[in-house]
Length: 100
Image 1 (cartoon, rainbow, N blue to C red):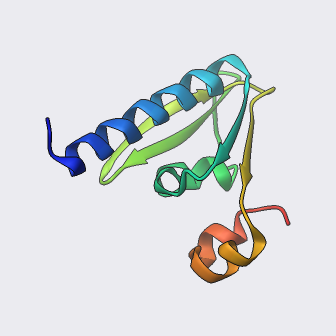
Image 2: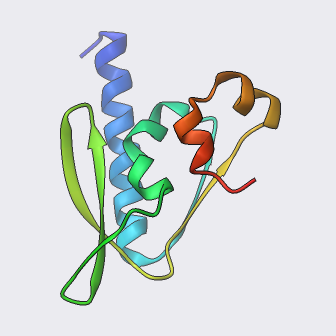
């Protein structure tokens, strides 16, 4: 679609899918200037994992749609942001999920 909102949503979906692959394979993900993804990653940032059959899973979401994704023990999610921007612009629940 040529509509900017459609393209933005499509790009968010692509990025979430890339992160899902990294979660399952144990690769490290570094997020920089990808604020539009953080809401989808709240449970991952909060390390709210569910164990089933000896494996870890986490919910990722886009709007009201949620999907369980496998999380490899070696997976790391690193969010890099300017401290002033974080405290000025980020929602408190997201800030609470971060290591400072």
